[in-house]
Length: 192
Image (tube, rainbow, N blue to C red; front, side, top):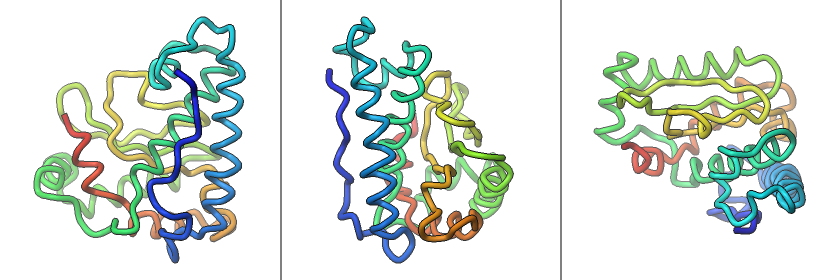
């Protein structure tokens, strides 16, 4: 199976004013594309060609693993956002978050705290653990919960290219904007 750049699930300006078209052009059109193209190049002769991207991420090592993971992480991130996003999660997801964190507001605070505390580049994830409980995981670089036992539900890209054009080095402002475009329906559909 070929590794290809997925189309954005919305128009490039659909997340404005929270995330600009210029940021999407750079983030999706340059950064995500570069990971996809390099992963596709490295896939040749790896013995993993023909596998779905998720399986390449789970089985690959070295540079192929890094680029494949970044290709998958970015594709997942785009699917976590929507121009109709924001607001509150539905009952099942809200209940799960409330049982673990006290309420949805405290979940957001903890997620944001972890995103602000992640030194350098990486990702912050809402995951569902094998026991069904939610968790928040911060990963550095290209690391992804896809390679472990957790089920990724929501991803927030905290690499600078996700927000630098819009917010320069103000990650906190980016996180405020992120919450306004989270697609809670898509997140809830990933629950096991």
